[in-house]
Length: 207
Image (cartoon, rainbow, N blue to C red; front, side, top):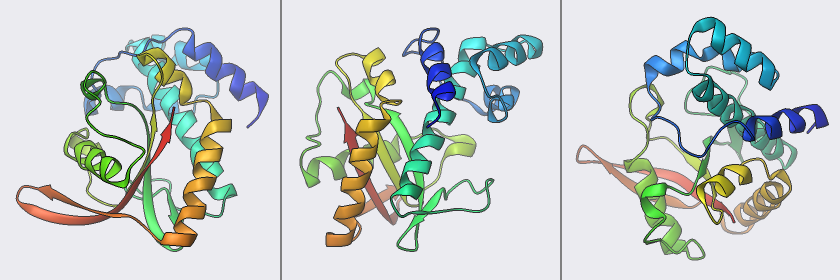
């Protein structure tokens, strides 16, 4: 990762908080300039010119750039990137299996009770089902294979910061890839509208 981008992500972190309004298709369409923006200042100027929520745009840009860096790390560890950037359900392939990647913070709805023990297979699978069942609706919803990188800090802001702790994320990805070589993929049954979907899915827990 280049130092300029690292600096821009740090600057962005200083101007966004852990809480932002729920993602929706309308707000996403109005801030799609984040895909071509290369700096904090670029995002701010484009958001102000479009008359949209600056913090919403910055949060999306931070999420986009950190996710892309995680995809790069997966590729460096042996995954094959999807060539079509518009593919909404596939970011890369691991041993030929397609996966979407979701880099996320530990869900606020679960942070009080912590009902899932992410050091166990059962706990991870239960949380995977929760994440699929509570995922964003609209254009972001799907029930295809997905890998989750779940960042859990001592508070919501620390969780957000962990999204750009790429040293720890890289270690987690390497351990996941080694686990696949030894044990294969983890599969989970997801129920949606009374239909059961079997997906290859897992959690890389960053804490």
